[in-house]
Image 1 (cartoon, rainbow, N blue to C red):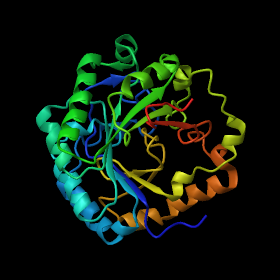
Image 2 (cartoon, helix red, strand yellow):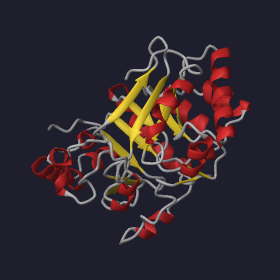
Image 3 (cartoon, rainbow, N blue to C red):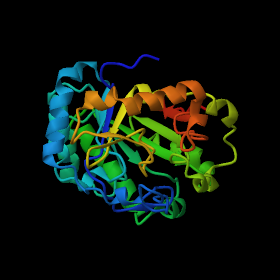
Length: 315
């Protein structure tokens, strides 16, 4: 596969901190072992200087890019400058800017400022249709408060005639697998026809095998075939952590392979660098089997998108 001149997708971690401890999240479980364990002590906030450098390097290629995701491992609303960063990305010409949030920190004032920032989509992660299931998975959050925050966000958006799309993300795992239909039936009457209810299947977070205990048994994925295939994100996306470190994908949270650092190199140099190209080539030759962290990873293999269509959920 040919490597494009510049990545079409960039994921920026502007804040590396969270107010929740979700059971499947690397921040909540002991996945940070091995030689890179000390890397998890990286900067909690991306410096303004680094963000400025990234924006300057993106600007000449903005019209070639599909998206910037302004979030990785942390809760983006902890970044008090989130709105200004979104606005800057939109001003330099990025087609789509979005982030995913647990929804717990929204106030009416913050909802308005986010909606006015120019953001294209806000994804709310709500992994349960009941209070019991949600709070078992999203430890530290209150189901009723999060649901109310989302409802108020949607109401304010509608009152402002904003075109910001809302996506409800449901991470399927063994504890909630049977609640998806109930989840859809509840939220379809709150969202609008341009919004999306999205089910994302649990994966191994770059080879953290014990997370498979959370997999629902009903997946039916052919892992043997999947492992023979390369991962297409290596030719599309660049992932930058809060200190500028570039990792191979958004699910390699423990930084098992570091491809460069944007604080010291340019985006183009890393994107076309020897380390990145060598990693891609191994994927071409051996598929996901090339690396233990990629083997059995279903992050991009099976995704369900229950888009609201005339009030009826696809079955």
